[in-house]
Length: 268
Image (cartoon, rainbow, N blue to C red; front, top):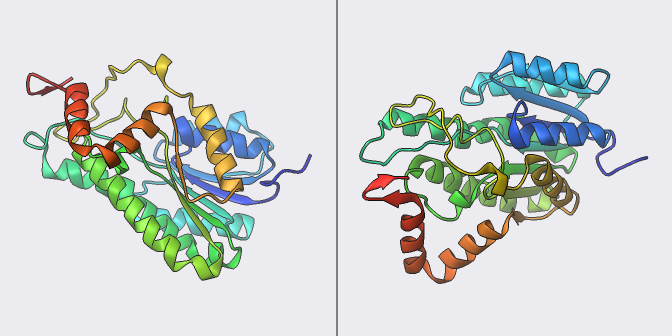
């Protein structure tokens, strides 16, 4: 049965885990031609094996490197003839107070979360304009509300949303839709691979994943928003409440967020 995504070319960064992988598998199921990238060759190979026979193109790519992004986008266009939808999903997080974090750690987060999206979008832009397509940025509630211990992550998501808003406005006459998505707390590998103060993998996650939205459900909502060419998508009750509270009661939200993340001057 034909769907909105049938035969559309969908490029998704960071497709080997979490929301990215869920999106890859959803889009394959909808009949799309899918290209994805990630840093881990074995995870991409596993994805290929699971989807044998699908129109799936994978590339080992570190999105913080512009030439890797260029290779991913150009090989996708060469393989499938163009790009209809680009989902900038690749991302890393961090858990460290500003006073403790190395500046280089903050650079790493910004390079992946912001510049990775910029590079891929820039290289894909001509094709997307030609096809009157869609550009998506997977942001975060941290793109609306700065979170303690996640300062660089928040900065990268604020930057991403501001840049996408500017791009959206630039492309109105080209009929290209630009959208940013804030998943809220979602089951994802991003917390397990969050960087510590020195830029190494934190390797732990104290949050209860059973209370979070599954990655597959998040992918479904993102796909529906792409179909409707929405401007923004904020998911989960907690996410929507945080955005609302921060907009209308910022001082109170400061105290609530501080209580949630910090105890006795240390991150929980």
